[in-house]
Picture 1 (cartoon, one colour):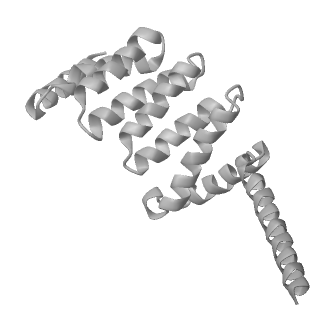
Picture 2: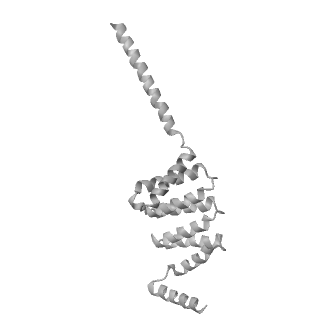
Picture 3: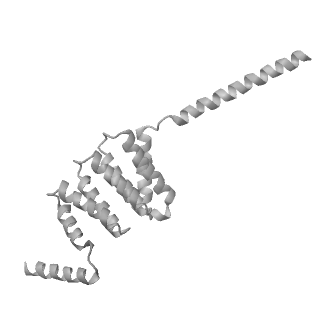
Length: 188
C-alpha cells in the first residue's frame, strides 16, 4: 500500500508542476507588449465610440483611449502619429476633467515634437484650459508666453497676446476692451 501512496504522491506532484508551468507560460504571454496594430485598431474603434458619445458618458472608453494614446507614444516615439495622439489624449482628458494631466500631455508634445504643427496649438490649448477651466492664471500665462516666444510667427501667438491682455480684467474692463476692439475693427 505504501507503493500506491508513493505513486499517488508522485502523480500529484507531477500534476502540480504541469499546472504551475502552464500558469507561468500564460503569465508570460500576458506580459508581452501588444503589437502596434492592436493598439492602433483599438484607438480607431474607441475614437468612433467617443465621436458619437459624450466623453463623460463613457468613462471606460475615454480612460482606455487615453491609456492607449500615451502607451503608443511611449513605445513608438518616432511614429508621426505621436504628436496627434498626445493632442487627442489631452482633449479627452479635458473632457474627463483632468486638466492638469491634459496640460502635462501637451507640454510633453511640445518638448518631444517642437517642430510638429500641433506644438504651438498645444501650448495655446494648455494656456486656454488653465485659464478657462481651472482659473490658474499664472500657469496659463506661462504657456501663452511660450507660444509667443517659441512660435512668434504662428497665428496662435497673436491670440496668446490678446488672451494675456484680457486675463486679468474684470467684467467691466473686459466689456470696455471688447467695445474698443469692435470700434477699431469697424473703422478699418
